[in-house]
Image 1 (cartoon, rainbow, N blue to C red):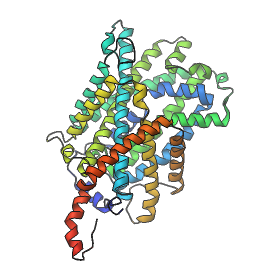
Image 2: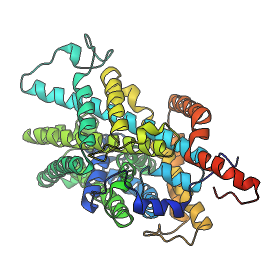
Image 3: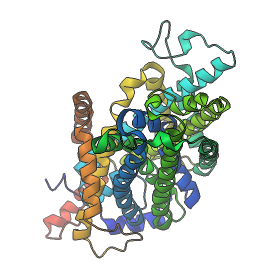
Image 4: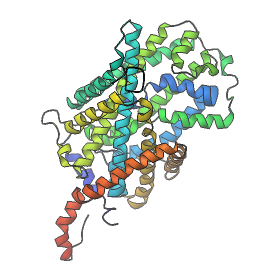
Length: 479
């Protein structure tokens, strides 16, 4: 058990963060906020708001968003405190390594790796679908063989554009974090501009009578809506993996986490108000509720705006989660839990180019040949597990190390972390049994790798071997 619970020293981690030169510190507060917004606000803002209103909460979906936002904020505040304490790559993986020990850190790192990878693959499939739709609208019809994965339609063999989007994102991320962040910021600005225009235009067509009854499904419907839209208000965890590339991580990462969540929540609430105000909520249960709502009020040009916003939104999500997956892989390898070959950074661009390119190839293969429904099933359980670990770690660390200097402190501990844990557990228990089964299989593979390789190859294991002669001489082991 002492081996499985060995921990990274927080004081040492803080010293390493000040002198670490593996990655280039280039990101300021607004670049980090854009990265968080890129991960949080995707095509879901144009779909999920309408579906949740139609099937769960009615116009009271705005309350669903507020509840989901508060639950997500409980975890976000815990992430913010950890980011100010341990500003290095790895996010929840690194935090749990410092508090809960190596085995649980490996589990959460392995968990995040599959989660982020599958997000990239599923988002690439969605982006390809939008792109094919836009080409069709201007009269360009792609051959069926390159339009989708097998079993998604007659004659389909491969989703070519999904593959190309994954490989392009990997190439962009290897060119340098500053250059990549600029591209992401432009995509986020386009996305938010489109959302603002839609909100402003829609506000002139709101009919207050469409907000009555306000909560047609009652309180249970509001809570059901909160569970559904909760997955629209996380993503800041992906941004926190870039802590080692922030110029001033102790200050800027907490700011970016809270700012990105707050801004995203405001946009989700405003879109919900406008959408349920311009048409009856019952009409919003479709794959393009925003576009169809504006068609209903005879403003078809807004559909083009929605497509532009959706493409920009999907692109920024693709970017944020591949960056996060590469940083988690890099952190696992640097700690010796995966081969250190993956922890070599590019000599010029200072990016973890080896895991980034491998992720590009893996996600391209999955996106090109797998239907989207199969890809997305494992994503949610990974994020929720990370939330539980981070919230629990804050409670433990406050008791164990109250002396640590914290650039940001989570308020109302342990209440807020308990809220984050409770909400995440509730959502995990609502997932389908098949999701648990597949998650269990992935976890079993991860444990096999850890016990065959990581447990002996980690840096802490090598340090124990080095220190063992001292222990034999009666000198205390410091690991």
